[in-house]
Length: 274
Image 1 (cartoon, rainbow, N blue to C red):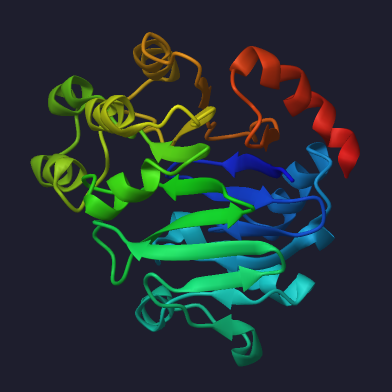
Image 2 (image 1 turned 90 degrees about the vertical axis):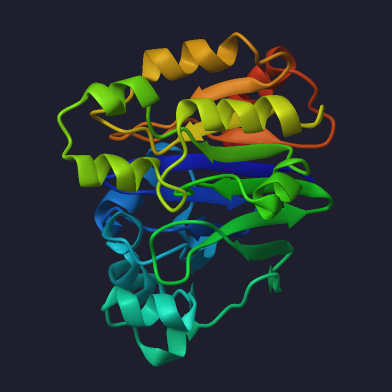
């Protein structure tokens, strides 16, 4: 069995991540419109009917904008904590609202989704691990620092969406007001390139085949900088930069994949499976 993953969009303008098998999938966050989600999934040959649930990490608008439309149109359950639902302010039919709790395993068909608290300036923020048959995919974005749980679950990942939000030098020398610089770089803000690299270097396991660097700042980072920083230390891990305005390819994650070179053809060829 394999898991198929893609970033549909990643950044302060909207975040949405797809993880699924051949017949069922979940979206982690839905920060782009229903129409844009449909458009990008169609381009990737990912059937919308495979999506069985949406999981919400926190209430910031770049993570929830598309939730009401997607839930209503496709009759999708929305897994969200009570605090996040209250803070979000949006209206979803009660029959679609599903509460979740930290460290609770939730089954979506053959997929298992586990949420755990993260450090971010939101009411009740969570990160996620999505698993099937011992294949683990982590979504670690919007975190101010790598807590013990992030380290614990990152070490278990075959693939991960990992925030690499800002370059410390660019942020310090940029035009943002001081309070915003402190918010971004604080323990409840975002993960810098240096912090993300440290997590990768210290705690990656040899089974980590794909690292999708996510939520890059438009003003305080650059894709070229991030790619250069990580590729220098990548080893057998394929480095992908999630875009602010377009989807990534779909990547196939399985226990047998050992290197980007061997996985490249599989990642492209798998689209015919859907």
